[in-house]
Length: 312
Ligand code: CP
Ligand code: NVA
Image (cartoon, rainbow, N blue to C red; front, side, top):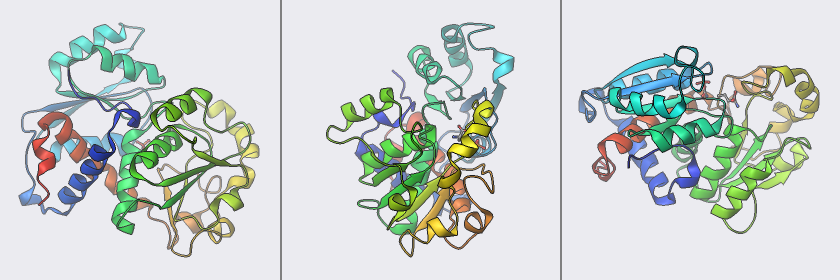
């Protein structure tokens, strides 16, 4: 059975920590000293939605490890239309050594993982963005030295990014809180999986953004309307109007709080330029860590445990 990276529910806390350790080690290595553990290996990328960071960072990551990438547009493949998900998964497994998939339905990623004989990586689905969340947690650890006990407040929709951050936070001891308008909290199905994985309390929820952000170590936001929700953009703009991350909201967080955003951002909506470009913003190092985390992830998926043992 190949390893997969479909969502963070199936990740052990110890492995999550080791992947971050390894990503930080590899990040510091000068170009001539990086291990080319994946020479001759090929990563497929199947994207049904637009992307900049995820596509480029995955292509750069496999190149850095000595391998190569093949990009496939969702329309060309026609998953479930031109051929079944299972037929596609079985055939693509003959050509590539791993497949990163960006799709609408999370079930598509699960079905691919069920049928493929090579690792399947979730490069964003409507329900999860695990590569993003792990790179974000890596960024917080890199900047703050540790994760345990840090308070991360996600201001906005209970979307794919927020859900993966909630799970990653639970794995790594970060205190996660979602602050959103009524009607935009985590769906029941997610909460059921979360409470099964982490018995006790569900992720903290607060409908007053000011109360939520008070004393936070990390303030995180994302677009109000995700890809596929463009038709709701207008109503969401009015529903989320009081959830904009601006100087007033940031001033309530801890003095040394950092601001994160997965990007792309809609300036003037969920965040103002003064915050996005301001001294607390770490969005560029955060985006850089997509590459470094994914190098460690590809190593683990394709080169096995040995890669994680090397901390030098
Ligand atoms: N953050 C992120 O996944 O960006 P892209 O949509 O550009 O890949
Ligand atoms: N929540 C956003 C994230 C984009 C990286 C979306 O799904 O469109």
